[in-house]
Image (cartoon, rainbow, N blue to C red; front, side, top):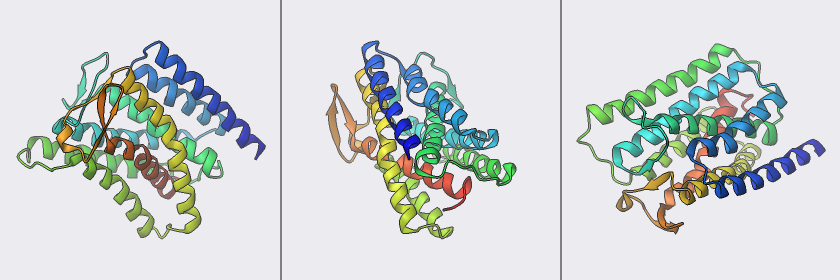
Length: 259
């Protein structure tokens, strides 16, 4: 208990200083992600001695999530990520945003294990861990490719809301199919989603204030709010909570002990 309180206090202080520094020095996309996600993830991984295969599996999961979010965003013009490089993976996903989301997903998984679970990694087969997430990522890339190059005439209205629905719906389906939908776990995953939304919220604030993420197709959002001179979709706020819910659920069921 005392260890958790101490760690939590250190994280609060760290993010307070990080927010101030990144804002004052007008940090860009990749630097902000390194400070907000990569450095804390590295600290948590070393502190808990996270197995390499768990980290690799979560990294592959992050790549799949990145292709889902950034692929749909690019096809539908939902937002534009402004980085130093213009390189796009498969001419779709900005390389920098791929790195950012991978850092974010790894951080969220480790944050869940350390602060909301028991801090003990499951001894499941390494290949079992990696295989599921590899299939998930490949499936996302294939589906995005089909939408982009084969079924490009199909237009899905309110695509951002649908994308969030896919994440939340998939998480709920996983819990139901694996019979892990217990009240204690659901309460824990909700608490995690609320707390984990804070670092992502800080990143969103900096993205808007330092202008390295711009939202464009406003008529495709269910609602918008004015934030630092630009319109931020309500869906972006919902995603702050939906993504941790998805990551925590998938991690618990497929990488941990299903409790």
